[in-house]
Length: 335
Image (cartoon, rainbow, N blue to C red; front, side, top):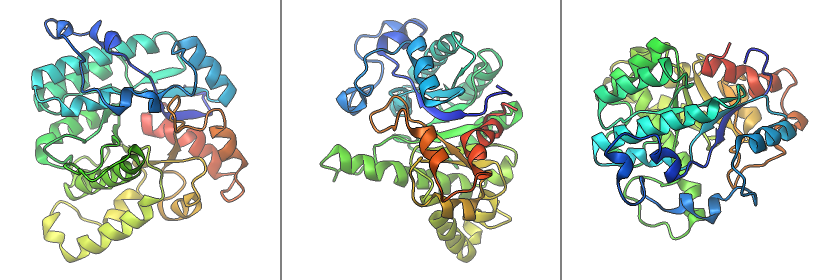
């Protein structure tokens, strides 16, 4: 990993019900029906760019074609674990998924998996974070807040973040396409997907910020993934303006939200062709931006992600290696 120059900070696997079930505890592995709510994630819109093969050799070949040395693997359907009402079932699913993705990554040192913890049961989540990192060697803990009753900044979740900080692994906020909780006005997937990712991401960012996580866990690394980076400068200004007028409602913060976001341990994933990237670099700094292929999802740019970033004339040659790999090394602790 030290020699890896190009690191895909957010690739994906297409985990199947049967894959995870084989690694789950009794009696949950025998439950009839789908392990998680089934909807658009399992439809053709998340097909593998016309390919049906999901094996590791194919993935490594595609990584070679793209020019990626190492890929960090997120799930496709497992984000729905936040919607499970049974905390014991959620815990069993997280353990099963984590065991499965660890088995996938054992097939190549070029693959590193992301684990999940049952936020529905904080003591169990802390224990699973520890097991995921110390026993399975996974690279961080992912969370999608869609379906959760509490926002990520609430004190009830602090023990999870403290354990992540202690173990020196990141919290990875990768939101679903669901849109704001309770929203029913979407009439197309296009509408839902367009709105859901940035709105939920901005909500999570504000929740963690106003909840005081930058002060409570000052060394915790956090990444916000898969909705571009153009929202970040706007959200910095927006949160600064609001906080300056109502500081008493975020009593743990000792500085402006924008200052915390520029300190080097909050990371933001860019889209390779994003026109607002130069301005985001100017405001956030080129040491806080990473890239994500989104492979093999329908909206990725395989095999032109790396080449698109390298060919850009509006960002400096000094910034490109940071975005393409060096920043991801810091995020995941690979260096």
